[in-house]
Length: 420
Ligand code: UD1
Image 1 (tube, rainbow, N blue to C red):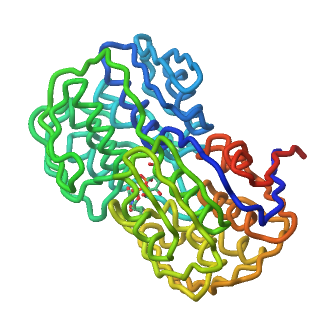
Image 2 (image 1 turned 45 degrees about the vertical axis):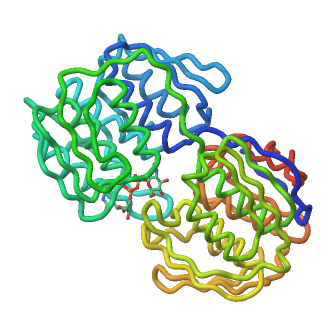
C-alpha cells in the first residue's frame, strides 16, 4: 500500500495547474447515458480513482470508454445492462448518480444501496422520495434497490435540505419525464450547474440553473455531438490556497474559475493573506506568523464548502488566535481531528462545533488518512510540522486529488510517495 513521507516547513513557491472537477465529472459521465448520439467526449477530465470507478461502472453496463491524457470518449451505443453492483457503489457513493439516467432511459435499474461512509451516515432518502414522486417504484432485496417505472411524470419536489446528489439524480430523471418538474431547495453548486447546462446542450429544458428552484420541462430524447470541458476543481484550488496560507510562501494557481471561489477567498482574506485574482488564475502570498484566526461555518453553495472544512482546521491550528468552526452539512465529519491532534493540533469537539487553538507547534508523526478531504488536511498539517510525517492509507487522497505529491513537490514541498 502507498503512503506519503513528508518533511515539513519548506516554504512553498511556484505555480500549480488545477485539474478538472471531480464532483462535476462524475454526474456528467452518468448523464452521458442519456445521450442518444452515443459517443460523448469530455475534456479537462481528472483521471482520479473515482473517475476510473464510474468509468468501470459504465463499462460493466456495456459502454466502451477510451482515455487519452485528460480527456475521455464514451461510447454508450451498447450500454444495455441497467445494473450497478455493490463492488463499485461501495467504493464510491457517487456511483449512485447512475440511478436517475438509467431509470429515465430503460424504465428500470438495479443498484446497490450505498450504505454509510467513512465519516458517518449518508442517507439516500431524498433521492428515493424525489424519484418516487416522478413515478418510480422501489423494491429492496439483498442490499439492492430495484427501481421500475411505467412512465416518469413531472412533479413538484421540495427537499427538506439541499442535497447535491439528490438534485442531480432527480434532474437526470425529470429531463425525460412527461410534463413539468419543479425542485424546491435544489442544489445551486457549480457542479450541478454544469450538469444542468450539459443536459440543456443535449436538448433538455431546465431553467433556474444556479438557483435553489429548478424547473424542468420534460422532452422526448436527448442528443449532442459536442465535446464538453469539465469545470475547474474549486475544492482542489481551495485546498492549495489553504496549504499556501498555512505553510507560507507565494503560489499561483492556474485554470481556476474565480467565481466559484468567492467565499473561500473572502475567508482567507480575513486572516490577512494577500490574494490577487483574475478570471482564471489566483496568486496568494502568505506569512503565517502574521495571520489571524477566523471563525467559520460550512454551508451549501455559495457558503464555505464542507469539503474544505478539514483543511481549514489545519490552517487555524498554526496561525495566531483561537477559533470556532461549525460543520452544518455533515455533523459527524471530523475523523481528521484525532489524527491532526496527533501532530500537535489542539482541537476539541462538541457535537458539530470545533474549537481550534492557534499557534500550535506541530511535529511529525505517523498518521492515517480517513477520507478524501481529511487526507488533504493531514498533508497541510504535515507540511507545517517540524520533522517527518508518514501518512498511511493515501488511496483516499488518490480518489480526489490528481497527483497531489507532484503538484506540491513542484512548488517546493518535501513529499514522497512510497510503498510498504
Ligand atoms: C456531494 C459531494 C461531496 C460534498 C457534499 C456536500 C459529490 C460526488 N460529492 O455529496 O463531496 O461533501 O456534496 O457538499 O459531488 N442528505 C440526506 N438524504 C439524502 C441526501 C443527502 O439527508 O438522501 C443530507 C446529507 O446527509 C447531508 C446533506 O444532505 O447532510 C448534503 O448531502 P449531499 O449534498 O447529498 O451530499 P452528496 O451529494 O452525497
